[in-house]
Length: 214
Image (cartoon, rainbow, N blue to C red; front, side, top):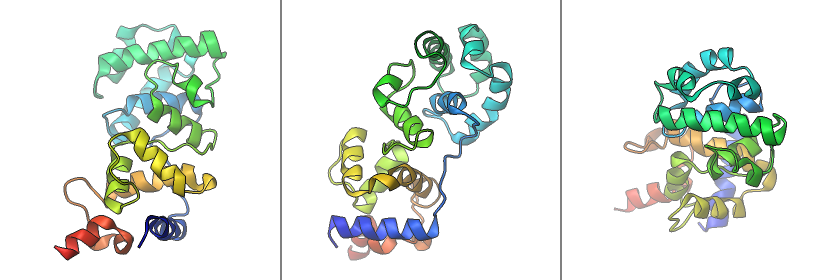
C-alpha cells in the first residue's frame, strides 16, 4: 500500500465512522478558545475545562482580562502546567488583542503568532476551528499517530509533519482531520499502549503491519 492509498483508506474510515470530530476544549467564542488553547500547552483538556469556567466568569472579554494583573491571573490558572508563564502570556495576549486588533481574534496565522503565548500550533487551531481554514495543528498526538500510521515519513518536527499531512488531505477535510488524529491518539493509538485490538484502521497502519511481521 503506497502513501496515497493509505491516506485514502484512513480518510474514508474516519469520514464514515467519525463524521463529527471537534475539540474537547469548552468555549463559546474565539477569545475563549484562544485562552483555552494557550492554557492547554503541556496540559490536558480536562484540566483546562476545570479552570476556564471561573476564568471566563472573571474575565469574560479580552478587554476585562487586559486590565488585570499577572498575579491575579496566576491565582486562577495555578493548577495547570507552567502557570507563571501562562499568566504572563494571557495578560500580554489580551493587551495586544485590545490595542492592536480591536478585540477581534485574527484569522491569519501570521498575525495570530504575534500574540504572546501563541505559536504555530495554537494559531493553526484557531484558524481551523474558528475560521474553518485549511490549517492543521500538530500536537504530540498528531505527531505520533501520523508517524505510526505511515502518513508521515522521517518527520523530525511538527512543521515537517504538518507539510506532509496537508499534501495528501483535501483542503476541506484538513480542519476535521486534525481532530480525527488527536482523538485517535488520545483514546486508541495511545503513546505507551496503543489499542491495536480495537483500532478500526489497523489494516492501513504501518506500525501494526511491522508489529505483525516481526
